[in-house]
Length: 214
Image 1 (cartoon, helix red, strand yellow):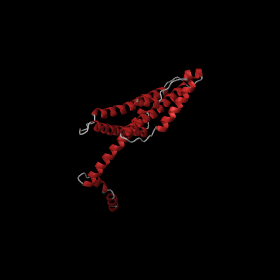
Image 2 (cartoon, helix red, strand yellow):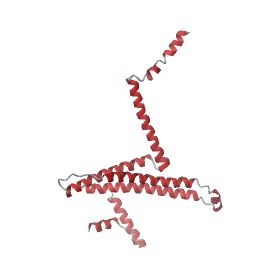
Image 3 (tube, one colour):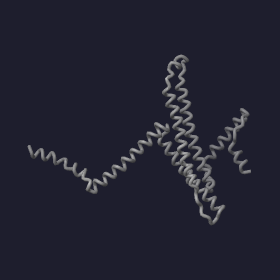
Image 4 (cartoon, helix red, strand yellow):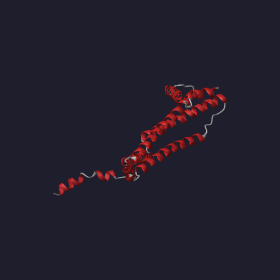
């Protein structure tokens, strides 16, 4: 009987080895686990913040972040190129406030989405069922749809704005990729048709660029 008990306990001899902090293996495993636990925790908090607080997906927040990094980098490159052309043989010193402005801009975007998300949450929690029953109209759903549409519009607007800024920086660098030419031409055509039909003047980007050139 004692032999069976001893044999059973021998199966657990790995436990003391796992918690022997004096060994290199335990130390490496501990550090590795700490690092990855921190990464998972931070990722979870980012997901919670972007989805539940800001009201946008992690993919969108990450995409805007990467696009803004690219915008900042191409902007610095373009500024350096123009500086060297205007001030030969002089050292280019990028402005630190541009980096701060990039951070403020990103935080402003996220806070803007957060405010819209707060309005969506508050609208969804309104207790106006009695009024809706009286007028036989779902007011809450209409406002929810409107706010979600505004949020979607802002998401595309911010992304388009930052991508266009990258395109402008590339043009300054001498790389005219004409990424948005098709879209700009389409918008110009639509605004022209709208003006002809309604008589309402809408600013045309093509005309603005020509005026700026003159």
